[in-house]
Length: 593
Image: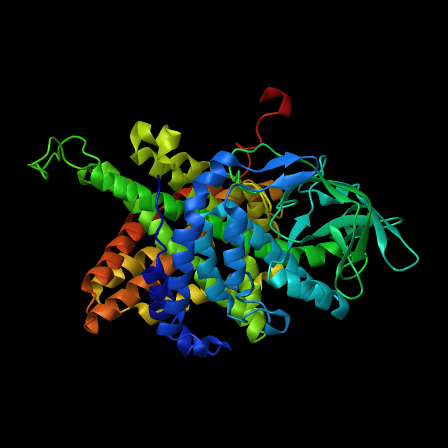
């Protein structure tokens, strides 16, 4: 059976050596002393390892059951959810006035990784609730916030997001769900939504659905979409629960993975709903939730990759297979452990260097969210908007690939369910699809985000890389050669790709769009390269200052050297592909495929 240990030490290194949170001017960061964050992360790690992870296999094998309109979660989920609620974990970064603890997003993100790595399907119940609560917090009336947020922040009530319909996914302008205005200001919501994560279950007293629908007479297409709060059980004026609403689960999907989460078909039969935000501006409100969800899904790519890596590493150390070609390493045994072999080392180094780089990327992104929300930093808000499709698309693509690499370390045992490795691969696969499939993320990046605000944010990113290179350069010749020069080369590749789009995309948009996926991956590599340069610089400084933990920082440097030498040069390949344009991509008529 797999195991999981939360990477508390690595998260602490990123928070304090790399991001230097206590030196930041972001309000609330002055409280994030190392002892304080360690206490939070250690406790979260304990919950992850001892409460959530033992239920991961249970959730996978049992799944959810659906009978007579009732969904039951796997054995142990309900008790674990109570423990998570009692610890206040769902409201870690939510406002105190609604029962939250008002912690920065950077702390919540670190905790979120641990929980998701331990049990992705379980953690989605509170994750979807957090996103729905964030949308109500940002767009709801005072009455709506007071009615729903205290119970949602505590997860006494959970939440969902309802976008997709059987005939439309990405193109939400095609939706058919209707909202009929009522005399009392409410609406009657009718229609069907599919793929609704956590849509029905037995772990909360109420479920607050956020549903996209078109008000009767609304404009055609996406401009006519509004967002509604549709409770499973109606809430009385005094806050007590009233009558059952016309919202019901029609069935739960049989899925490849995340079996412990109830993915529902939701039927709305003149259900009472309440407008959230403005009429016909539903996408604006929904994107508050969607963008948060996309960052959370990017974290799922990291979390499943890291959990799979931890187990592959232990297996590689224990499993005896063959002899080291340079000489016997285990003379008392019949063979040497797998980890002596170079190809196994290559696989493990790819997994390790990705996981540690992605962790830094996620926490840096969370710090940008904190800057945007806590000190109204518009530049930080623009930068994290630019990076959101990169975090979602790149980290889930590579995260999934790394779960396959981890599975491969096991050889035939990786294909056998009792070893548990296939679950990481199956669970990770959905992250490339939901909250906007990764091809859509790439189109969003190239088609919208690059040109946003006149290209201000992508230019700011290039300036950020340039300025940080200038700050780090000159530490010593080895660092410049191993970290700075590869980052400079990769950044130049990314700029060259952007220039190609500018010069060739206007005359033929397909020249840009056919290269969008390569650009997203290229951007992701540059971001991880930047993170590794920063981590390498911090490690060098710690060693120079005489740290007592020499092994940790030397290991960090060795891992960073691997990424810079073996992974970051992928930007050159992506650039070459981009510069071939659209001709070969679009050459065949549809009938000739």
